[in-house]
Amino acid sequence: MQLHTRILIGMAAGVAVGSIANFAGIEWLKSALSAIEPVGTAFIRAITMIVIPLVVASLLVGTASLGDLRKLGRIGAKTVAYYMISTAVAVSLGLLLANLVKPGSRIDPATRDALAEQFAGEAAGKMEFASKAPSLVETLLNMIPRNPIASAANFDLLALIVFTIVFGAALSALPTARSKPVLAFFEGINDASMVIIGWVMKLAPYAVFALIAAVISKFGVDLLRSLLMYAGTVAFGLAFHTYVVLALVVRGTSGLNPLLFFRRTAPVQLVAFSTSSSNAALPISLRTAEERLGVSNSIASFVLPLGATINMNGTALYQAVAVIFISQIYGLELGIAEQATIVLTATLAAVGTAGVPSAGIITIIIVLQSIGLGTQVATGISLILGVDRILDMMRTVTNVVGDLSCCAFVGKTEGEMEVPAEE
Image (tube, rainbow, N blue to C red; front, side):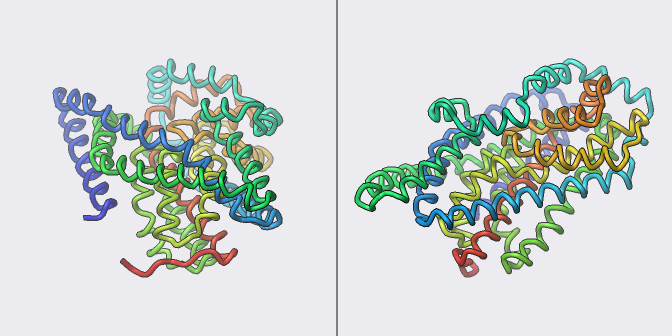
């Protein structure tokens, strides 16, 4: 049985068992599901453990193997342009849907105040964390690490990626005799990392069951009902962007049959959904791009680590809907200027969003503040925290599919993509 089939079975079983525990109010089953949740957490930690050595090794070897610095610049420009444009499209789609559906007009003040009170403490913590977020200038400066080792230790992927690309470019400029031993060392690290990924993925179906069942059992039905229009708007927007917009992009830019693309990237989507982490899905994305989409190692190892850091299509769309939702709850009308600010701010903020669970909440605060929502920010954030986890799972799928669609686009346009025959 293929891996993605086993993961899907684990996910379906988790939804079923978690739903029974939640709907029937079976406390002992809820406790049992909470007790096995660390199995899922251990899986996320294990797959994340290999991200730093894999990113450094694959990106460095990939960059050095490009050889021509002009080619590196061309691929980099394509990648960044693709990610920025697709993110802006996602934000615009989110704004369009939120303005059409008007999910914020469906919640009565009593429910609003009850939700705000329930999640006030968590919202305050998010606000404090967001207040320490660096400005755009600081973010750009922080991309140049003073200590690459410290960046790796702190999981600061953007700075680490910049250093690795520069170092790989420098290796490509050296004579082969000088660069070959260094590249051989990192190729060994890359190969060993792939072996570890194979080991860890054997745990995936059980980890997915533990993670999904625990989330569903804790996910209050009353809360979902109260925020149904908001959650439904986000979910529809994410599904439309992923399986319609990106499907058309895949067909138009890489010539791939979208059904084949989605079938072959199914394992990545399932891991992304269950872990809510682009970083955790990165090792699987790399293997999928090379083995199932036929993209060369040099392209995949450059495009995908960059995408896991700066491409947040799903997060940006979610932010757009959330900001309009909160504004509508308080009866605040946002004009063209404010909504244009949302597009710009959400697109730029997505670049700095960490590929870890619930990081999008932090950037929502930044976007809300950019359009002048001051006193309502903390209360607004508390309204959406209850359903954030399930929406986080969905938007991570959109993020990783966006990464893989870009990888296919760059691979095709560079002549470095040859899709394997059907299994």
